[in-house]
Image 1 (cartoon, one colour):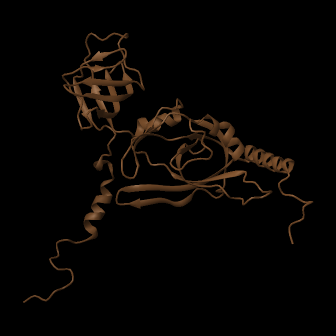
Image 2 (cartoon, rainbow, N blue to C red):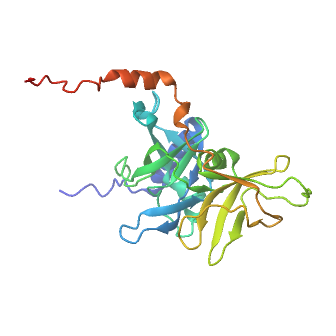
Image 3 (cartoon, rainbow, N blue to C red):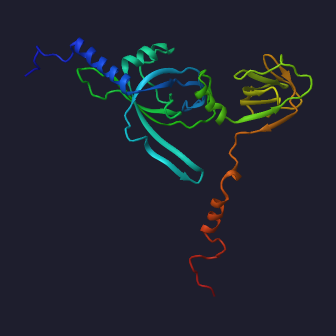
Length: 294
């Protein structure tokens, strides 16, 4: 027997009421976050994996955090590389709000969140990367799908470019990017000559140009910090102390150049861990398994 034709789950006013209640609930009990769509700058040819990406836009939207007892995942792990944070979270967003605040503003009229995009949670001041988007939960209640469920993991910075205009987000790039520190000469530098944070600077070599993005400029100490350094010929190069670093309002030859100021110092770990590791296994034994000696 067919379903009763006098009772329909596709009654539009009921569907709108159901969706309105979901949006109102998220607005009451949710959190404001920033959604950052990933822009692929360069990808490899075989698997089309992202080699270099950037985040230029940040859209503020409300979401509901399903995790009630804290972040999920494996939590804080102590590994041979140090402490790793493997927090996970599930963010729920209404489809209508997604389309109105984010989807319609993207170039490709994106109809759902994409894996690889990033969510900034001001509550914990952390970034989460979208790993999977569930589009059918809850499953066709009133014959519609009103939600997106985004399963996310804590974002690991790997030299992405953040230019959203929001200090809390853009500072992640400054703190984590591999940077060069260039010290400019002290004499003959007025306030009219300066470098702007976020602008691209370069040095012109024979046959190629070395480019980078300014992350910091201190006029008093004459220190310029540059990240995302790369040559137009695709090869590795270092900044020269014989050529001027050219920007929009300044062009100066650096006196000194220091590489990788944000690298992890292996000596910064507490010596007690090294001492414990050295005594954990006795490598002076020629045969710890006790082979017979003649």
